[in-house]
Image (cartoon, rainbow, N blue to C red; front, side, top):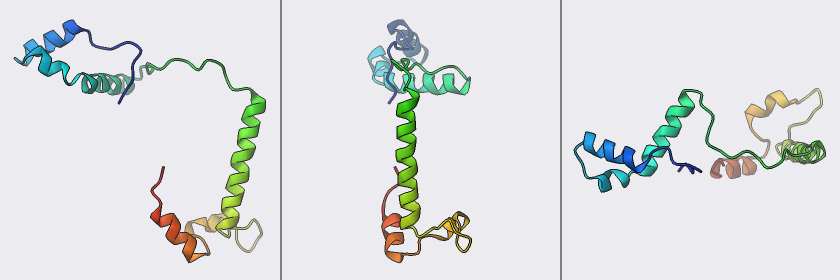
Length: 114
């Protein structure tokens, strides 16, 4: 669910909604999180910025470089495990064919994507 620093709807708004649909205010307020989510979706569809607090500080380039190198190392390790080499006989374009190890293919098929 969406988290807001400031709610989109006020108590008066919920009273107006309840009156419009001829329901008790308590019944309408029960769905306040759904109203907030709908307001978020509408705003995003209209291109409005999300109600998210800004990051306290940008990440320094030196730390970003370390993170990227770690990701690259992990990706190369994965390609090696999938038996995808950089030579002319078997390139990255063959990755769609699946890993060379059927056991590894079974494990990858059983894992839910993140």
